[in-house]
Length: 395
Ligand code: ADP
Image 1: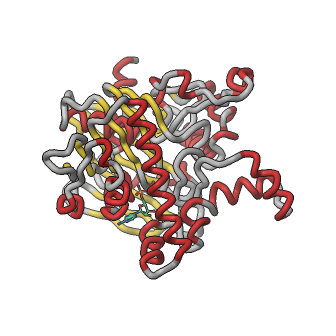
Image 2: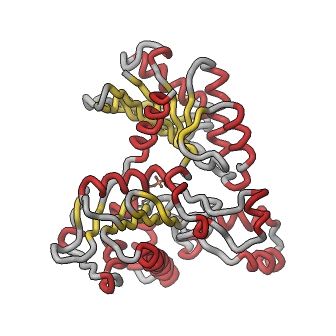
């Protein structure tokens, strides 16, 4: 049996799923989430498949301490005997630069992640700190990273290349990488199972962080995020695609440094910046309904952005068999799905309004629609866990 602990790390959050693989079987033994990591007091919840949930508060200094704490609880609750029983820990790691796929966390991997940290400054340091700390605390434990860029390795070169001097690409790796690979891979595999004839798929992963991916025959052929997680669709509080020549006038007018400007573009832009209301689409929609014009503009701009990518990707795919909405926004907002889909009749797409208003996984297009529209919950950790297991088996 392989027991694999998968981690998904945010600045102050630590989410995990603990898997047991036996032959073809895969069980989730525990899931957990810690909030306010690094604060005076952290809150945590750990749940087991039998319905038991442990909820408590305790000080957790960092992500290494969070892992140690969760491991101690799982041990106390009889889910795992000792560290030797854990086959590996796996990370849903973000930017691996020249490294892609599933890789052992070793000195070379750490060095490459450090090298490309300027391209993922909000994400790579968190993973690097956790990897180094866990290595120190548990030296014998195998650590494996599955990079979020991995699924996009199949995008043709012409589509990952920017119109910049070629040596920037060679020397600095300035090119499109794409992210949310685990989610796009999960959706691609799920649609392949549920709708076997669907060769051309567009997946809209819309949540706290959003990207769109075009999939042809199970392989990513285009995605909206680029060299960093800042480009493409505008996100809840990130700018998305933006004109670099606007940086200078903004800095000159407001007296901002480059770092201050980039901070605004990455943390105070998107839905939040445009609406001035919130980075949560629910609140922005509420404000729009109450007559807030900027909130309405933010909602309209987001939907229009999504529509534009769908159009571009339908062109890349030369048609469309399946359109998927996933992520917190994609699965929960029937209003957003309707606003996007009502402009896609040129593809022969017909939304079934009754199905769209329901919840849970399923088809939300009419029986006669030429494009099947899906509302599907993603499961990124299961993809990472499967990849880590495959990696271990190949050793
Ligand atoms: P993350 O990218 O952090 O994993 P999720 O995919 O869970 O985030 O998405 C969280 C986001 O989903 C929230 O920021 C919220 O804006 C949005 N969301 C959740 N429910 C709804 C809803 N009913 N309508 C619109 N947006 C929603």
